[in-house]
Image (tube, rainbow, N blue to C red; front, side, top):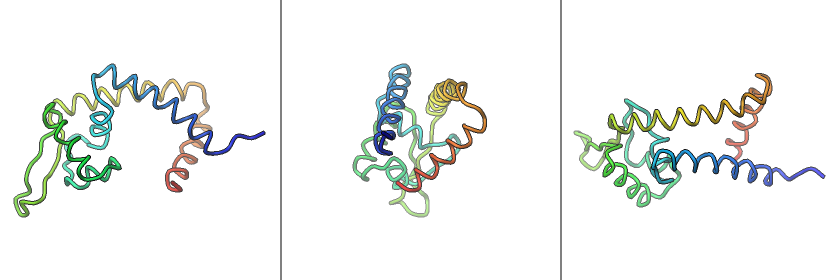
Amino acid sequence: MSRRLFELILSIKRKCQSNEEQIQDELGLSQAEFNGLIVLEPGQKILGFDFADRMGLSPSRGSRVLNKLVTEGYVKTQVKADDRRTVLIGLTAKGTRKKKRILGRMEACENRISAKLTKRQIGQIRSALSLLEEAL
């Protein structure tokens, strides 16, 4: 009998979550810090409300994560000059270094997966996952 799509998604999620938790432990990050750093790009500034939205969090929860990242020195905030109610968020040098370490570990994980697949299969998986992401 074929497994349900949802069951397959949950199985993959559990396996990915295990790898994600290992990266978080290795780098001394909480899940919230890890996810916050993932949504930010070096050299880029985003609006405060975009930060919570990118993380899929409420504005109040996003604010708490942001405050933790600022306290840890990974992120800096800046009030927008033309609208003092708007905050811009960007990675600090420390945050950029941590993000690079995260990406390095994610790439190593992806390489372990890719080593078991052909280039064609990898392309098919990327396409299928993109479709799934859009559908969700």
